[in-house]
Length: 466
Image 1 (tube, rainbow, N blue to C red):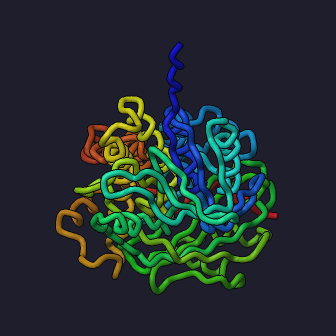
Image 2: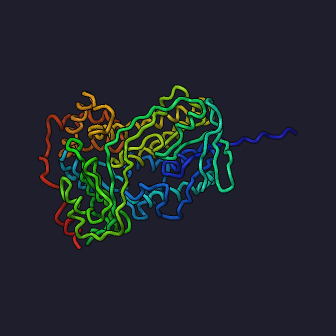
């Protein structure tokens, strides 16, 4: 009797066990056997690792990312909360000063809940959920060297580990290696044109210190406190107090050119007291620091337009920060990574992974959340001196004025705030800012008066005193 042919699943290789890489691996297991290539040795629990230096700073997942995570990895969000994370109501559980120097009222009328925890905890839970899948193989201590194939199709990737160099054959290679991605050079080595890039650099420097939550503020219910920088009044200085698991506050301060924070521990609280409102510094006066100050200067918005390549190989896709990295102050990186992976899954449910043109369709689908986050970040940062090669256009200035007015309206109208947060959370497109929910309160009211100061209660201030 003739033998029955064996049907093999496609093979995918994901470069990088970052959040973006693991989200992508989770999306791909429905369609392929997946190998994740990671140059580091991954920790067993919520511990820092060399390849994610930004993990020390404040992170959150906007509600649009929470929705994507619930669909992509059911149970993950609940697991983070069980391990000490929080689903924080925005703006009810937040004290926030907008870039245009208005304080948001703490309205409870919106559905938006952001996931808040340390990045180490989030990464640990993601690893636990993704790597337990038997269709995923993890190769740690392995570096990607080059793509295999030609200008028409990528057929695998050349890697190096402790045993030398090897080729991993693949029907799809996904680059999720972050800001340091070498994909532009790899594609050039295959004879393809360089990918177009754009950078908008506000010159932001970040400084972070972890504190033990003071007094009774350690009960897990203390609000996020956020003072945002104003691009219209450079240098832009801002900061955030992020209560996280373990009765800790992650406090991140930032300043643009001419107003940067330093690693000097004695200067940390004075910098916070010198913000446009001193509320963060006042909260830190009685807080015990749990370590030194960590400083990061690599915060530019940088985007590579892979979706616009006129010639591109099948079998290769770039995701996460390897496509676009954003000024971290906007907190959209994790949300974009989750939404991008979900977009990959949705395309592959309609199109075979090995079909001609599939990689291009995946790249274009993943570019949609990238574009939303990019426009939100660049729409602010382009106004800092020296941020871009050309000044903002008239149209960009008019749009920025409208957004300022939308923010001012949302700060004192719950209906408008819902529309504003729909966009900021990446649940709805920017056109939502021109909906009736925004325009009616903006033009006709009713609107409550602007607040004179931060909406933090006296009880909350007392809780933060030792």
